[in-house]
Image (cartoon, rainbow, N blue to C red; front, side, top):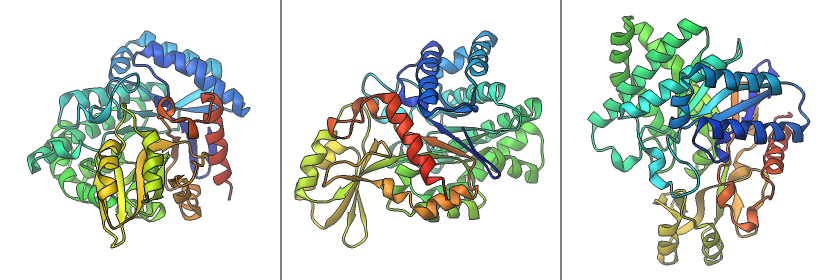
Length: 398
């Protein structure tokens, strides 16, 4: 929905909460779930959409008939898509995902082709005067990147997609940009790592590719790279690093890095105690990675790649004072003590930056609905999403 016109601010929820991999399944989720959320909120004005489009669906949407089917639904229900979650390439529900969510990564032509198809789809659906954002994997899963050559290969492909999006804007008049989404244990994880990539390896690998593809000058290539490649800022992921959200936002802005989209989400947070370890056992599940970050009393951060490994190691780990777990919980939910959530990290300083227009796209992203344990499960999915909207809209009121 349009929260503000000056500065422009659009709010949506991410469709990756709904299972499905084909365009027909995505279409049915829009018709049945997104429309129901709109009705639950009592919204009469245009209702923004944050799409989830798998690689299978993206290929299907290269058909004019499929695009027309979506366009007809949007017109009928007063919907407008302005963002796509292009992070999960393949299956995202109904079975183990774990580290496969990062594959194929940005070293591969498959990721490049998929993202190009997403860009064409979104540009064909964007209303006039509204830009489009696509979120994507943070380059790769960190253990998979072994050399500077790997970094440059990712950067080269990102240069290719920047050139493709620049050509798309020239042809259609619709601007689409890509946001790399820093995430725990990935190639891009912290704010400082991401800023270093945008300063060094990204231009080193991407600018020659943009110049080669478009035949433009070095200065023009740099402008296009900054216009079409940026960051998807996930508040859950930033909080997991024990970083201040407002400070991180300002760091990207001050470095001239495009903030493509802000994803509003919360992680589990709790003191490092035996009671916490027992409570966290209910969140151990086989579908998604739930990286764990432990803050030590000396200020250092310990890491475990998944909750299962953390729960085995924590009873014999000393010196910790706090844990944060990459398990998305609804923004409005308060887990039972000793557990809490990082929703409190979305403080007034953060919301002030948002209200002032630091990024025009906001997306509620709680995708773990199907694996939430009973203590934090809010019940009906439509009512839960609507309640997250209400929580966010209240925060957006100065």
